[in-house]
Image: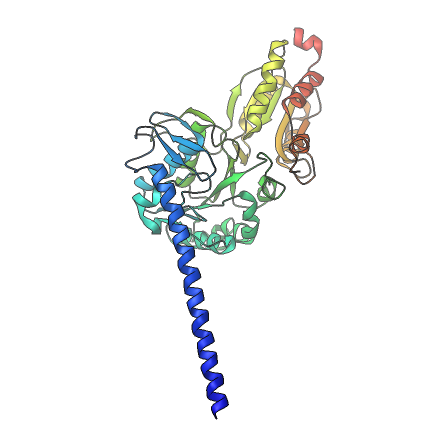
Length: 401
């Protein structure tokens, strides 16, 4: 009937218009993406060789500021991480990286800047915004012989991949009877930044600590960031690699291409005799600030950067505790069920007779991180808190002696 033909004709015209509209929208989105990427590449300049060997140049990082790619061994942490990835991808063709915006955009903090130009779009793979899927893809790739680095744009987003991390990455070697290895590195920015809000200020160390079969590593300097990431990529174990969002622009010397640091070894920051301060990640610098003030008043604390937050380096910890007999744990993790809680329990279980003072923990408040800067500062440990704890734990006679 004519009415049916008319109806079909109208439906076809409507479908055709919908297809045209969708194609126009896709074309516009594609142009926008490539214009944005082109602007970034234009600002970055032409990449040739590794960041450490190039002359200094300014690159755009998409955040209304500019960053420098260092020409010497003195570089920012993001550069040292970038160089570690590049050197390992050059050394081992099975190393690849995947995640949101790791390719043409260069990563949210530029750790993979320009790597796609050198290694191609398959080894530097941009993924959809679907953490559970690309984490599973990375674990599957690791099982079949590759060494994937999976970047979480923000550590808080990895909660969407928690099933893959907990039920697969840490357990497959065991549940397969040793037939499969899972040499995967799961890395990305975390911690309390500068007014990033509750969901982007997550500290997930304690979430992942209870998963059997995974190692947790927290870098804190440009040098150990590079050396630890290289070691993590070469490891046959699944490694969760924590990078603090406020340390990416921290500048310092780095080692050469052959320097690799033990993943299970703590780092002695300062030797002392009054008490042992155990910390990691950004809190290392909060502790150093407090220690500087305390030393000026005659206190002599020992500072240890844990580096490995699972497993703990109990050898280094034991040696220090038996020397100082006092332990102060400083962390950015939450107080309830945090890394400090586990560490305090282990110390009390193993070294109770060596302690002259109860173990003291300074941790973040058990509240969502506020957006307001003044409130945000109140929820995390400050240098004044550490200094006050040092003075309360070390008696005056011991300090004078």
